[in-house]
Each structure stands twice: as C-alpha cells, then as structure tokens.
Image (cartoon, rainbow over all chains, first blue to last red; front, side, top):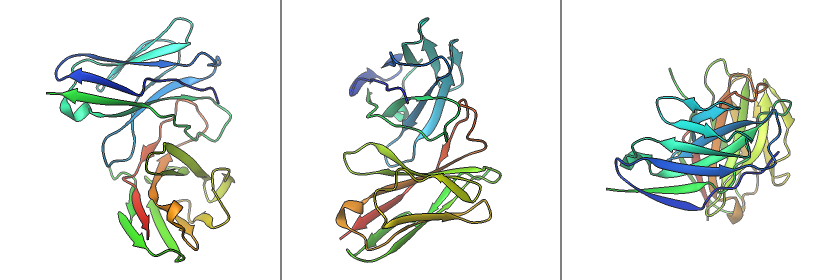
Length: 111
Length: 116
C-alpha cells in the first residue's frame, strides 16, 4: 500500500478553521483517500473519503490536489471536541480492506 | 443502531495467563478486523475475517495469538501465555463489504489489556 506523510502535530484555536495536510506522492489511480480520527480513549472513527473530487460532509471537507499527490482535511470551525489524532489512509480495491495506519497528526484545539 | 461492541472494556492479567477478548460487530457486516494499539505505537492490523474464515492473519505477532469468528458474527481474540509486551488496547472494527475501496470501517471502543 502507498505511504502517507502527515505532520506529527498541529494547533488550532477554537472556532477557527483547521487545515490538516497529507502527502501521498506514490498514490495509484485506484487508491481512495480516507481520513479517520481517534478521540482520546476511543476507537478511531471515520471522517471522510474521496477519490479525485473535493468532498464535503457534516464533519469536514476533503480537498484533493489535482495530481492527487496530496490532500487536505478541512475542519471549518474547530471545537474542543475535535482534539484528536487524525489519520490519512490510502485504500485500494483488491485487498482485504485492512487499514494501514501511520502516526497521524495530533490536533490540539485551544479555547 | 448498535455499533461495534467489545468486552471486557478493561482486563488486567498476570504474565503467563491466557485471555480472551470479545467483539460483537454491527449486524450484517461481513468483514471483521482486529487491530492493536500499544503505548507509544500506532495502530497495527492483526487479522481480518470475511464471514467465518480468516484470509489474512499476517498481523498476528506470534503463535500465542489466535482468533475465531462464529456464525459470521461474534469474534474472539485469544492470547495464550500472555507477556508484558502484549499490554495494549485491542480494537475491533467491522464493515459491510471489504471489497470496495470506498468502504468504511466502524470501530469498537477497544479492550485495554494490562499484563502484570
């Protein structure tokens, strides 16, 4: 599976937008970009995914670069509850569907 | 609807004892995954079930680890002769169909295992 690179940590102020970057320069044409997050003392939860076009849902937006070598998870108004580790993961068809987690980005939200 | 549940939520055991961890996936989900998260480590894949069979056991760290799934539903992860390095949070996840790359996984809250 292709590798992703994320900053180890980021900080944000409450109610401000947050842009979490992810580099995936070896992405293949069939790889989907998934984001999960893990709140303290909880299991990971799905946030959003996309293939080529930008995506929006109730939790966040996903902006995908035109060459697909990078993507950005956007939280439009960070809340204290958004403090978590955010994982960017590539998934392709034809495998078992298992998720390969990197170190992720630890997001700290300051009041 | 009900999410993925795991039991026990916490388990303390002595080195050398066997432990069993249970996972109840979301009803109707055919795929079930076990992951482990050790202190200071990332999440690592252990084993994948499709129905009752396990086509991918590549993440099991040693032959002390085994898992089974019955009735296409509940799964049990067994660790024999536990060692202190087995201390970790064991997470279970399920998905409806593992094939499509857009398919998402739903995680349980995890079982926190401490081996003394």
